[in-house]
Image 1: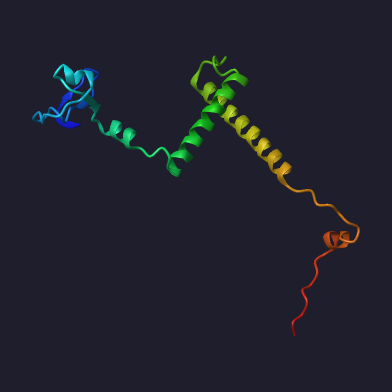
Image 2: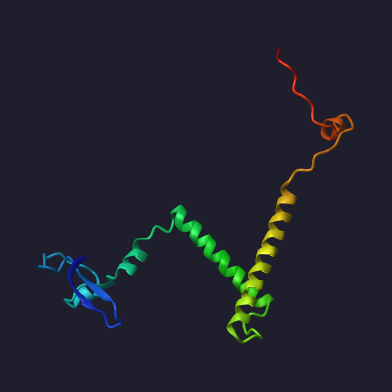
Length: 151
């Protein structure tokens, strides 16, 4: 695609127009099966040329940093959705700002406590159970032993 000019798009952002390389800047005699090419216009693309749009397009969505932030964001959204359903935060019964702030603080505390409870239960299930043999019991429950002397 051949860049032609920048302009202000009707949606309010700065755009860059790209035209068919077979027709612009000069027609080179090659043909294309694209329907707009047959009309003589060729392919035309208007891309959002703002910094944020360019960053969004060039973002490496497979990179570890993006994946970590994405997991964090989706986890937070799930927690907020869960809290909204469970604690009836869709339409809070309190109206003044300090009360809403306190309600949100309590909700965050409850979310963190539930997450801590889930983490502890998962960790407890992951710990292997150690079979206690009578011959090993004295090793586990006796007092500290002094290391053997080298000299």
